[in-house]
Length: 376
Image (tube, rainbow, N blue to C red; front, side, top):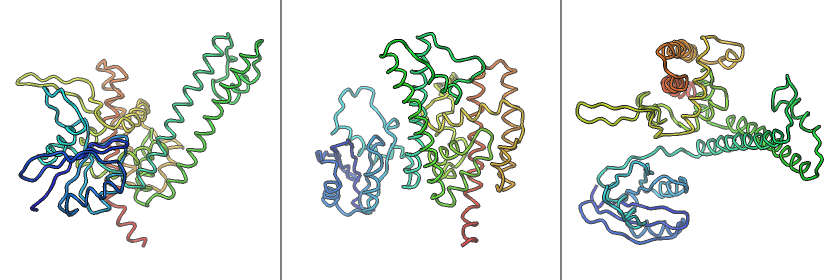
């Protein structure tokens, strides 16, 4: 297409620096505009017809609101990975204007890597799942504060009672101190522990309600992922919300790279040097699969809980889940026998687990549209 313009936007909370690269011409800065919908609309009107514009900006804390606005107006927009933007070694000057010009120039050259932009349903579910994760982390901090306070006072829980159970909290409530300040401290710490527990219960109920309102294809993937050992409902919802359409990955290796679970490498000539996993990917996804991988240290088995989760699922998905148990448990024992540490072994299992997750997701996304059409 002739007269195409490549636009680079350096987006901040209040301002947007704009630069334009002509198809065969110069790269110039257009200044700074407020980060408001009406200002962006006026900018698009000045730059030309929407179908002639190619706009990009870096993924960041401002989210995808700008992307949704531009696509709604008919402008082709891409959100790019900030860590993969080319950087000159000797460049020691960084400004918003120079960043916008670099984005426009690299976008025209095809040197930028776009990221997957979730739709409204995935974005809403992902926000809810991450809110629960934040509550779980707050719960851990609250429990640590209360536990360390009791330990400083020489108060240890009775033998035979597991920490943070109902009996343990009942014992905590019976504690009395000589000073009023310590009583107030205990009351505040205990209230925070109970408050966070209520938050988690409320958020998990909201997750259940949100899943029921999701499209049929997404609910099928969530149900199918729960056939895997170590992946219950919250983990399955997290995977679905973080990955979106799993079949967008052409191969399982791409999914492993997206999670940052492939080895980093620094090779030159005949020298090949590989290190630990790159961690250059989705940290939430990497955490879920690593936690799930620990369950494969046990021998293959389908208990009552797992059998209940697999009820109503296709035999193909069940077969993939069973192969995962056999493969990963054998891999666990093999790597341990070679002297690998448990942490490294579990990381390797998590990487292979992503391959089975990819297989289940692709299978369900391939068959689900046909089932929907037949039901309709």
